[in-house]
Length: 234
Image 1 (cartoon, helix red, strand yellow):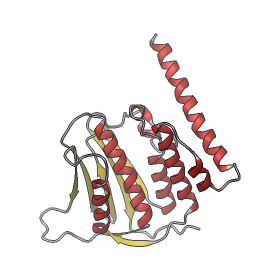
Image 2 (tube, one colour):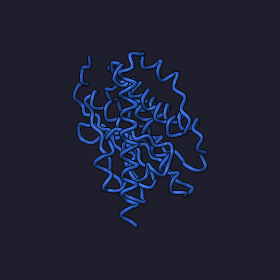
Image 3 (cartoon, one colour):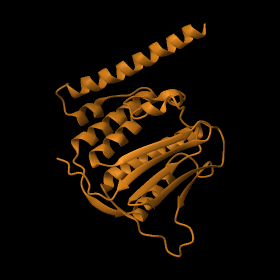
Image 4 (tube, one colour):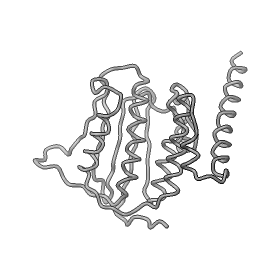
C-alpha cells in the first residue's frame, strides 16, 4: 500500500511539474507581449495565482537590465521593515528583528554594490518564504532575523527563520524551477519559483547565495556580496 501511495504521489508531482513547464513555454511562444498575457490570465486557485505572479517575476528578471548602485544597509532595512508591517501576518505572531552590530554607539554604515530594485525583490522573496514556512510550525512568538555583517572582504546579508526547515534530500534542488519540496506541498502559496528567481538574479549580478537548514529548527539564507565589481549586464 505504501508503495502505491508513493508511486501516486510521484505521478502527481511529475504531472504538476510538466503542466507548469508547458504553461510557461506556451506563454513564451504565444507571440503576445508577456505582460499582456499575464494580465488576461484569470487564476482560480491560490496555487495558480502564485504561479502567475512568479511567471511575471521571471519575465522581469530576463527582460530588465540590472544596474549598478551603491546602497547602504540602513535604507534597505527601512524598506524591509515597512514591507513586513504591510503583510497579513500579525507582528505579535512573528517579530522582525533587524540586528545591528553589538557594543557600537553608532551602527556601521555597510555599503554593497548591487541593484536596489532587484535587492528589494530578492528580500521580498526571502522574507515571504521565511514567514510562510514559520507559520507552518503552528507556534507563536517566532522570530525572523535579518543580519548584515562583514566577513573578510565580503558582506553577508542573512535571513534566518525558525520555521519547519528544509529536509536534507530537498536542499540540492531548492533552486530548480517549480520545485516545491516536501514542505511546499503543505501550503498552496508555494510555486517553486521564489528561490529559483533569486538565484537567477544573483547569477546575473555575479553574486552568491547559500542556504543552510535544520528540519524542525529553521533555515538561514545568505546572500554574499563580494568586494569585486558587479557583473556588467547587457
